[in-house]
Length: 489
Ligand code: 3HC
Image (tube, rainbow, N blue to C red; front, top):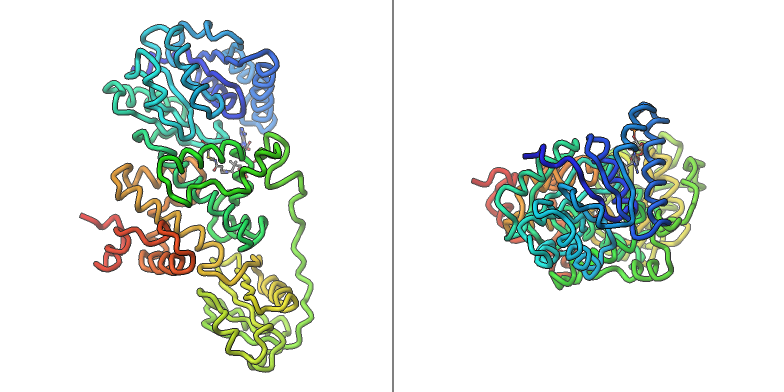
């Protein structure tokens, strides 16, 4: 049946729409690109020409091939030109009234067999479908930014989708070189529900002053191996889109963690929408240069706590004198938990800094309310000397990486437990849609269910946010001594 899709329409040629048009044309389909006016149409054409020119420059595409791809795409400002299309996908702004009006028009214009698809990030596909006289032939076909690169397509099937149609659309996605994951119609589907909740959480922690933008981004890139930090990714997705997705999630869940971080609204109102408007969390800054490894002027250091990484040895190899905690200029407490209690028991609590080594590339450097700026700066320098990137943060439960990672893993467990998606689909979606090195269930196996459960308990005790409490399934697995969620019968 996939052969039935030969001509597709793409309505809306912004970043996503133009990327989607490119993907279809690359796979050999005829594409009709539609925009509201000539200026927008030219911008869309520009996207496509620019992106394919880059592919030629990188040697991924030949000139002749590029010409063929561009020749497969026609541009129009008239929806009427979509009458004969086999499938039309919309990628217009995330406003339900716009989508409903568009689908009413498409339903009138397109032949009865045309499949109408929406690339909505989170809006209800069912609500869009019921505006047409063919709700059974309306599906979600959700691509990920940048569409030519990310391998996932979420195919969204509603309760009224015709039997077999989701499979046909999934086959079409495969023909585009993508991996489809078919899911039901729930706000945010799989990826945005997990991803945007985590990105929003990062923005909330930024506003709380847990760490700064660059620290949080570095923590998640270098500490977890994600391709981008949360703020660089929010800028890529667009802060307006991110804000809208959060509003839809919140409307469905009423979970405070889904309430958009106020900073998102503020940036959007200021016109700082991310990359597409030239600035968002990042505003044209140059990437940070090589980190200084100049030696901090510290006479002696005390290293407390379990030192699995040989941190103390690295410092003495670099020429730092070790001393007892009472005498040292800086006291570094290697710890997975906040260190304020330890600090309060010292003669010089201002000299104590908490240090949490994450993986082998970063160290979280936690300042308590008593830590002096000098001690924090010295610890930052010591971390660099030890060959790690320092992430300065406050002395809060789970510091930065785990505070962001564990709730995301918890949400994935809840999603699975709700019956919405299978473990393999959730893992595949996060890896292919976001370029994560492993899926949430793979990460859970790697970290250990008990470690994550205990981390969530600590986060809940600290922030008292109900959704930070361990998912009942996670708790039960740990209590039952089950090591992997995959071991469930
Ligand atoms: N169009 C076409 N190709 C592109 C591109 C674009 N916009 N951006 C990057 N590429 C290509 C590059 O040309 C390069 O190809 P090559 O290897 O053949 O030369 C390849 O992708 C890798 O790019 P770079 O080397 O320039 O950069 P990186 O290695 O840093 O990768 C990235 C860039 C692919 C964006 C990577 O950082 C990544 O995977 N980031 C995560 C993106 C993500 O999470 N997306 C999902 C967002 S959620 C979403 O979209 C849903 C929505 O509803 C909100």
